[in-house]
Image 1 (tube, one colour):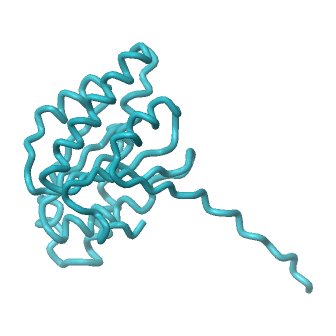
Image 2 (tube, helix red, strand yellow; image 1 turned 90 degrees about the vertical axis):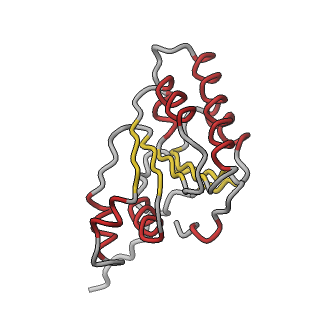
Amino acid sequence: MNIIPTLKPDQLSVVVTPPGIGLNRLPELLASLAWRGPLRFLDGDGRFDFYPVARALRRLTPDVTAALERIQTRRVFACHEALRLLQETEGLPVPLVAADLLAAFHDEDVPLDERLRLLAACARELSRLAEHAPVLVITRAGDPRLMEVLLEAADQVWELEAPHPAVLQAALF
């Protein structure tokens, strides 16, 4: 996932990973951005583990603590909370990475129409924030209705493919 050079201010970029595939390159992405300067990170499912980010930072700098302190992290667990948090986020010249944002919108206790409305409002807030600095949303492919709302708001979309299973050759001896 080497997309850092293509992130630009004034753009909302979305990376869609296949279902069942983890965001395994996210720690390297966050480490690279934090090594360069301040970073805002939105954890859409509230379970992101920062230990791999620290390990990735160790390969970039001896001052891991300073780089980790440059990452401002927010965790959300529900769609209403995601919108409130984005509305309260000030537009600053600091990149924003939102991981698994759609996870907050899979709550079936909230009617689908309400989730779609909230996600559309979140997409507008992400676009507002992109006016000041690059915004990157990394999400797993999921409910096509939710995906459509997010992808319509995006300026750039990358859809990653699932790795092809290795073709194994039988041993001859």
